[in-house]
Length: 503
Image (cartoon, rainbow, N blue to C red; front, side, top):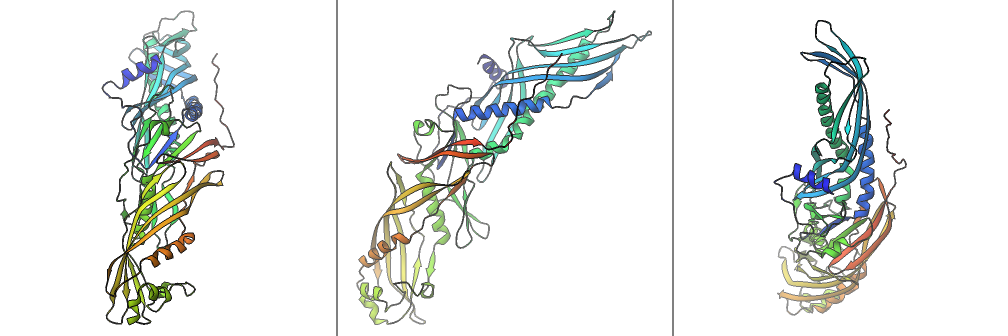
């Protein structure tokens, strides 16, 4: 760990570290466990090491005022070890390897620019000294925008103790008088630049998988009846676990998680609420699986908000009611004539219902149920009396409901959350009436009858194509829904580390 401290001091002096475990309020938290990150880190190490060993190292030739040279047959041996990352500031990380060992060999032919033009041959070795501290790291910038995520590695730098990298020149001639070290040092410096650029590229090559892991649901895979679409607000930040003990601590993406409505005309409607609840550190960090999705009530509230914003205000006309329905929008229908006797003055006329934007329910979650509280919806019942339609009465509906949610594994890479109404406690109040008394209890009975016909959205989630899921579990806790599972690398071909033996 000493070299990591040295690297931080040498590369980021002046940058303030953020506090671990400083979680903001959010609708969705996506956690990757330390164990999973360690396994993925091994894959990243293997990929980066293989990419570096595959770098093209072409022959070089050049000249100076004192000599001309040709360098050929470059060979590289290299190992990376002890991957780590640190949070430097909000959404700025450092990722790298505490240990990088390398040896670069090549042959040389050099001729002095003198009257006798003497030439020499030999080989040069540039490499890390055994036991010396040498590390390499990149700055990783993470930005969670509303509908996308941007992760990019830049500014890769090597940090090492004085004397940790040595240049050795071996001349094969009987007499060796031409100085080669200066040219060899320049080549070595250029190689370090090539090496750090290669590390940057290797990390960025793996960014798409990293992005997909932290933003599991970008669009809810359902289209509303009017063609509107639902998106997830991905604004947020990454947070390290509160008391990290490993080089790769558990890390969580705290995402706004609000549901955004996209109308068919391309306009976006954002949630009227903002997230306010923050789960405890233990709720977000003590999972033992590879992956954890924690959902708070804000996500559910904004989902209802978006669906209602799409559908309401809404007008229901008599001809929209199926003929088989037990209740028809007509003043002479048995239901309406029983609850509103005053409608008998207007026989056999249609009733139009205007529903208005509701008050979105509050969501409360405990270990046994999800509750929707204080949902309000108002509606005008308008008698279609020829050219003189009039509002017969206005009703305010208030509803509390209970949900039961189960998780269904739709495929090895996809699951969905399926919810049903387990309880419905409706109430109806007649706000105004122009036809005399109206019995609101009839509406209560009607809503209770409709409970079994109400279908709720079933959001689905797919893991990145590289993985499949196992051990999928759903758990309700204090104000949170948690989905935990392990991720299995489903790649058919495993990548082995390259090795290069230098003689």
